[in-house]
Length: 168
Image (tube, rainbow, N blue to C red; front, top):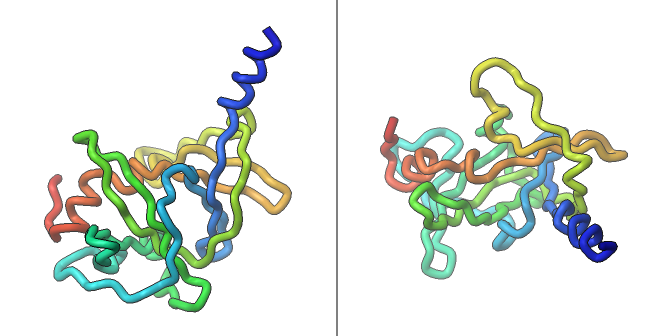
């Protein structure tokens, strides 16, 4: 019986890659992270939203690059030596996977999160940003927001990012 409790405790823990956008800390499931790259200018896509920086060819795969700083409302972020692109795998509605590059200010560290310590996102009216939040965790350094990648980069976002049209 002790072994079952240990197995349950292991399944309640997860690792998250944390990063900064402005003064705020965010994190994503580390199992979704494919690579971390330094910032490089992407091939722009005409008629795309302001947060879609374009696409990059990564070893033969075309990857849309989304600036999360702009997506989250930061005004005109600067690109510096600490700016990175976190390439993540997103589950599409059709069951496939899509790589997406998320531009952030800097990568912080890997967090071990016990899901029992994760707090649900607050309810704030209809929809809004909370639909992209998986939860929140309080750490000594402050609150870290855990993002739901599949909702943040849903199929509408990805279709729009890759071909310049939006299905609504």
